[in-house]
Amino acid sequence: MRSPIAIACSGLGHVRRGNETWARDVAAALHDAGAPVTLFGGGPRAEASSPYIRIPNLRRDFPVLRRWLPWPKRYLAEQLSFLLGLRGRLLGGSWRLVHLCDPDLALQMHRRTQGTGLRVVFKDGMRLGPHWCSRLDFVQVLAPYYRDVVAREAGVDTRGWFVIPHLVDTGTFQPANDRRATRAAWPELGLGPEEFVVLGVGDYSDGGNKRLEWLVQEVAALPSNAGAVLVLAGQSEPEVFRQFEMKARSVLGERVRLLRNLPRAQVLRLYQVADVFAHAALQEPFGIVFLEAMACGLPLVGHTWPVTQWVIGDAGESLDMTRLGALSEVLGRWSASPGEREELAGRARRRALEQFAPCRLVPRYLEMYAAMESEPPHATGEPRS
Image (cartoon, rainbow, N blue to C red; front, side):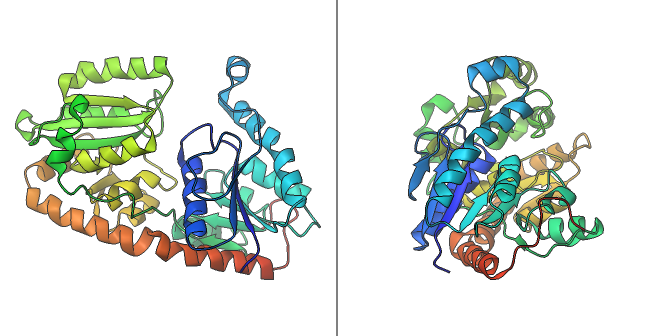
């Protein structure tokens, strides 16, 4: 498959979240493998190693939009203002394959390029459901559960659906050679060499689906001799962050470190100073953060959601994150057992290399693109079953 590939994300260059990370990392992996890929985004060049083209658009956090519109409408405005410029650029060039992660952008691109020969594939975390995804010819889902259980139980035709999980750059995300030295080299974080460091990454918004407040509560339940410190990193506006910080410090005092809007290199350092990674989301579409932590050799703990269980595998534990004390029980055991942590760390690194490394997943992307070129279009833009 040698047709040029376009990967586009409306927020790329403006924000750093799951979709933007996916677009940048997949484009980089394909480019490094020699595939003809171009990355498109709405903002300035987004630390991408692949060729990059900017399509200026209304960003979702534009002050005027923030003042007058709720988040869903702001995100819609971002996508639709990106659509026309992207469509014109693609149809005016040699691209015949475009891979999208923004839902309204994908659907409108599909509808507005019928008969042009452009093939559109949508990367979905199944937030919108299988019937919505059935409007498109081609869909990438991130775990077998979405296609083999969710879609089939809904009676949806899954022709043109491909299971390809997120990938992680295992060359960049690696365990620290010396965790103590890495902590010492970051004195502002104030982590002692013997402290048991629990890391969480997510969103500081009150009631957000990442549930960082649950991590605060569960770490607070650990006995003082566990020597536990909770480090949290996430995206947030200043006022939201300030409110979260006040609540967290009222519970954990000096046993919590809170970091906001870190660049990616700093997030890597966080994985390398931590002992374990905890994620309290109850229905995570996938969780790139699991892969980053896994590649850095951190034992993982997450909720008993089928996708999360599949991602974690033998690299940690899944438990009921709605049961008070369940997480603190696991963390307490791990804090007292360096040997168990070391064994899980080795499993985590191996799982990242064997299941989610670019060398494992790039061939599956190329197979999907080749299959798209050989398949006739069949979706009309309306749900099918």
